[in-house]
Image 1 (tube, rainbow, N blue to C red):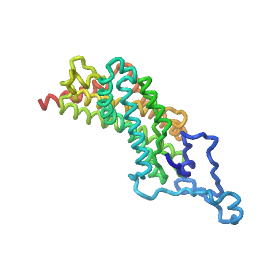
Image 2: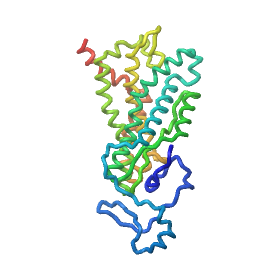
Image 3: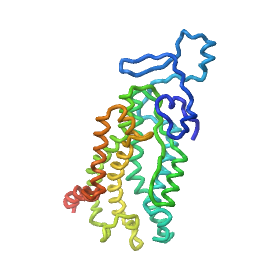
Image 4: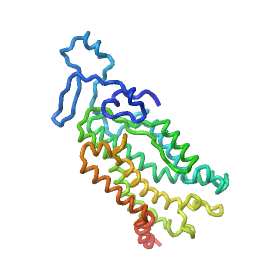
Length: 320
C-alpha cells in the first residue's frame, strides 16, 4: 500500500489506522485567511535550537493545491485499479449467491455466470463507487487541499471473503485521504460532494438507461419469466445480453441511491457525520432525499425496473 502522506493526518482521521497511534501535529502559529481557512506555521521568533527541540525537521507545513483538479498520481491510479478490481469480483460473487450458488447451478454454470456478472456489475455499480470518491477529491482540491484515493487491502480482502462465503456484499474498498486545513463549512462541502454525486448519477441514469434499453429493445427480449438474476444471462446455452443490459440499468439506479443513503449515516468515518457537523439542515435534507426513495423502493411503491420500462417503452415503440 505504500507510505501514507503525512499531510493526510491534518484534516481527516485515517479510518484504516489505530487512532491511538496517530502522530501528534505540532501547531505553533496560526493565521486565518479571509475565507476562514486556518494555517499553522512555525513562528520565526523561535530559535533554531528550540525548533529542533520541538521536532522542527519532522514538520510538514500544509500546502494548498495549485495544480489541475483532474489529476491522479501513479500511486492513486494503482489504488483505484486495485479497489475497482476487488469490488467487481466481490459484486460478481454476490450476483451468483456466493459459494452456495455452486450447489444450485453446478460448478461450470456458476463460473460462467460469475464471469458474465462481473462486467455487468462493473458497468452498473462501479461508477457509483468511483465517482463518489472522485466527487470528494475534486471538491477537496477546489478548496486547496491535497486529496488522493487510497485502497484498504484488509477491507478489500474482507469484502471478497464475505461475498464469496455468504453471498452478500459488505465492503470498504478505501477512501479519499484529504490533507489541508479547512473550515467546518468547507469540510462539510467536501463530505456531501460524494452523496450528491450519487444523486446526480441516479438522475442521469433514468433517461440514459431508458434511452439505451429503448433503442435496443432489451425489455422485449427478456426471458418469459422476466427473471433478472444472473441465471437469466445464459438460457439453453445462448447468451441473453438483453438481460445483462437491463440488469446494468436497474443496478445503476438502485446502487446510487443505496450508496448515497449509506454514506449519509452520521456515524464513524461516513460522510453524514461531517455534513451534520457543518449544517444539520443540510444533513437532514440530503438524508431524506435518499431515504425516501430507498424506503419506498424496498416497500414496493416503485422499482427501478418499472421506471426504466416506462421511459424505454415509448422509445422502443418508435424504433420498431
